Length: 329
Image: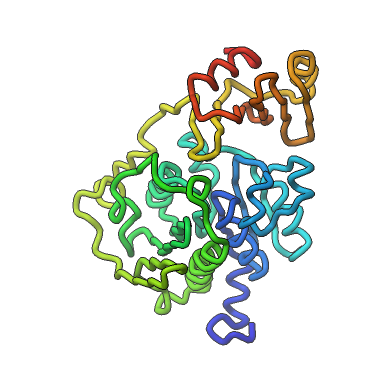
């Protein structure tokens, strides 16, 4: 409140605001930290994954105890954030963001913060936000490079105007790494633009895409152009990512050695513990997920919502075989 551009009036606006963070990895953990400490009234965050040792180098809300406990990232984040600001309402959702649930997840939100790590999900987020009229702050970080922009329906172009296709084989933190200072800077750029929007500081909002390379000392700011006349999202209003009911039953998570199987319905983890223990090397289970070590070295991770990770392979065919062998068709 002592910061004049926010003040008491701005703080009240923050308290009455609701934001959703999609993805609680490197960017998401920093974004959530900023939003909760700033006093945003409702912070909802969604993530499909669980905490692993390799995350700790850059995902600031997690620690080795979360790895040991096998907590989903959303749950581990919630446990940390509740200790920071008890006045903030938190909604932690363990789920894969898909065409089927994206709009319900964003319902009632004033702003969306992009903590994702792939352009398929970003385009889904972009299309849903622009159809629903919700601004979102785009951010990306990989290696020593980062970029960020705030995209506001009716005021700026959308992500599809700037990036017209999703490259499923692009570089990610899990394939070429990332240094954590890049993550902090990108998420801080996102967070400050979010705060400006939420307190109605429209005159101070940045109307540009910032890109930088910390290691090689490069910085570039590109003014956001007018929307493309033929943009299928913000101009033609076709919203390609939302205009489909199809979803791959198996998705390889780039660089993770993991294939996600969509599953066919909810899973009772205790029942599956009993079923899998005789056929696997080791089974561990908590309230949020079950992990089963397989004889050939792979691992199954079962979630109550029906999703199954097959870890130890990028081969979708192999993953489908293991899924059918241990879980069924």
